[in-house]
Length: 308
View 1 (cartoon, helix red, strand yellow):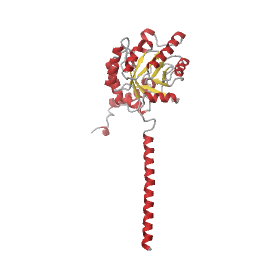
View 2 (cartoon, rainbow, N blue to C red; view 1 turned 180 degrees about the vertical axis):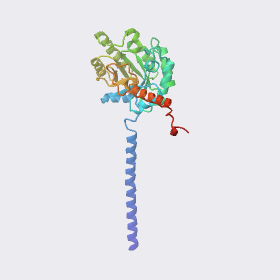
View 3 (tube, helix red, strand yellow; view 1 turned 45 degrees about the vertical axis):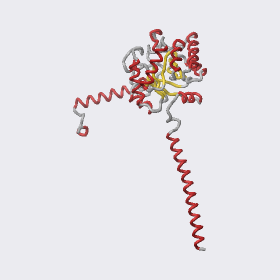
View 4 (cartoon, rainbow, N blue to C red; view 1 turned 30 degrees about the vertical axis):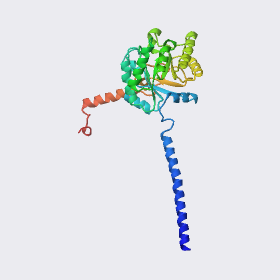
C-alpha cells in the first residue's frame, strides 16, 4: 500500500513538474516574442518605398532632412528621421557655391557614400546633379547606375516634369526608385532669375499638377514640392496616391523636408518664411571655439589630467 501511494505521489509530482515546465516554456516563448517585437517594431524597420506609401495611407506624416557626411548621417538617422536626402544643396552649404549647379556627379557620389555608411534605418535619397540627366536619357541612366552602385543609396531624386520624363522612365526601367521634384527647382535658377514662390499663376499651377500626375504615372514613388502656395500643394497631395513631401509648401502635404544646416542653426544667412530653426549650433560652436582659443593662449589647456 505504501509503495502504491509513493508511486502515485511520484507520478503526480512528475505530471506537476511537466505542467510547470510547459507553462513556463510558453511564458518564456511569449516573453521572447514580446521582447523581439519591441526591438523590431515598426519604428526600427528599414524605411522603404512601400513603408512610405503605408505612412501616407494611414495619415502618418513623413520626416525628411538633408545630410552630407558620415557623422551627420548617423546623428540624423539616430534621431528617427524617415528619409535622409543627400541633396545637391551641398553645393551651397558644404562647398560655398551660390547655386546648386557647380556640384559634380563625382562629388555627389563621394558625399552619398559617406552618408550611407552612417545610416541604419532611414531611406537615403541621392540628388542627381545638374547635367547628369537632362536632355539625354541614356546618360541619365548611366549616371543613375553609377550613383546606385558606388554609393549603395536607396533611390534618386530628379528635378522636373514633362521635360525629363524620358530620363525618369529610363531610370525606372532599370529598377531604380525615383523621387520627383516640382515647384521651385534650384537647378533651374538661371531660368527663373530668383528664388520667389512658384506656381502662383494659373498656367504654371496647372502645369505643375499635370507634371505631378505624369511623374506618378511614370512610376515615381514620391514627389517633393518646393516653395509653392499651400493650397496648390494640398491639392496635389490629395490627387496623388504617392507621398508628397513639401518644403515651403504648407502643412497639407504628406511630409516635410528641410536642409539640416539651416534647421539646426549652423547657417544664419538664410531665413525664408518656411524655415524653423530648432537650435543655434553656430552660436554654440563659436562660443566653444573662442573658449578653446583662450585656454590654449593662456596655457590652461592641456592641464595635468589631459596629458600622458
